[in-house]
Length: 358
Image (cartoon, rainbow, N blue to C red; front, side, top):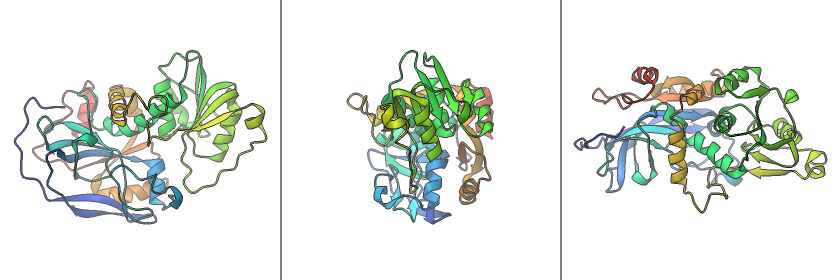
């Protein structure tokens, strides 16, 4: 939350610790020198960060295609693919030093996993008082879902399927569940994802049982089979919104079947730019402000499926890559200073407050 008065400025710490992917399937924590914040910069102490499993596992595996390596850079990435590279973009912290009005403010930043960092205040998104810090790590993924909905433009009475019940697909379904649709199904091969759908209040279907003749299908499974099924589920002249990132994998589609015969469209949705339908009236900062405001809904806690300390991050990433954790968004918790204020004291959910205090 924002303090009523700014705390006194303290001398900046000179060192930080950051996670780097140093080689294929290997990462480590490295010390770094911290610059002194400039006039329009802030020193942020991290509280939590989130591991975006799909993208970050591609980086961990060294599988970013060289042809799109520059386009796939995270906003505050250092180094280059395949490594060494400092990657990540779901960081929540509190401003320790900064311009007037910023110290004490909880913020979201598209920053890699690092315990303290100095960034321009223009790259920070203020977190509302009724959004708990741990939940706020989801801001970047909600932003991805918002962009996809702007891209697709769902309408009153639409029939929609979301294929792939992972973090991104689940986020899309979460936002769509409040729309006045005729039908919404979350589709996945894994029957265990039914629990996620039930938690969101959304119908679940196995791909073989999903209902066809959809107006829009959001494809989020990152699999060739999922995209093929999406083309079968969408109705004549309908749209498939492709949200998957295949990295260096090749995908083959049977375009001689549904695609041409039924005049279907496949449209890419990528969060790097604001969707064309809103690009002239919304900035990326506007989109982030909207995303974090949506996180006041406690239903988003469903996506926080694990938590580990920052000191164990290299092993945690490897465990995620090995499938040891069944994670949607795995949260990293940073050490807390003894004089830390309870940033989440005003959250509306007392259970979340107690969780954040642990």
